[in-house]
Image (cartoon, rainbow, N blue to C red):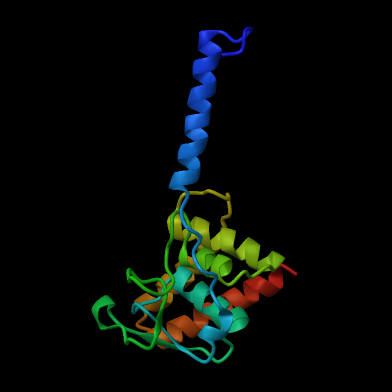
Length: 175
């Protein structure tokens, strides 16, 4: 103990040192970086009846990750082994992680640094998670249009295609 250090200061120092050591020990190991080349010309699979997060994620995949992506629909228990699941409750693929919706997960995993994509990620997050984290309201209209088309009986593929077109329009509106 330093001559001028009180017992309380010494104890506080010990506790801070212990907390620092614990933080280093409990730090998660770094996850390997996603290699975009591993995701080219793939079949991306999601649940039937795509909504706003799945439609926006498919748009992001096709526009920024895999321009030749093909999309398929399957229940959780029937995801083909060679496909890439997205927005599913599946042990592999891309979905909600922590506080992020699937769109945000894809944006971060594939390191997409586009200002308009960042704005869209906030819009999709707020409508999909309904937590108003970013205070964005634009996505609610898109979500309602998708729900309306679903109620009309539009096929899953057509619903996804139309949703992707809506997101493409939103992307250009932000220019």
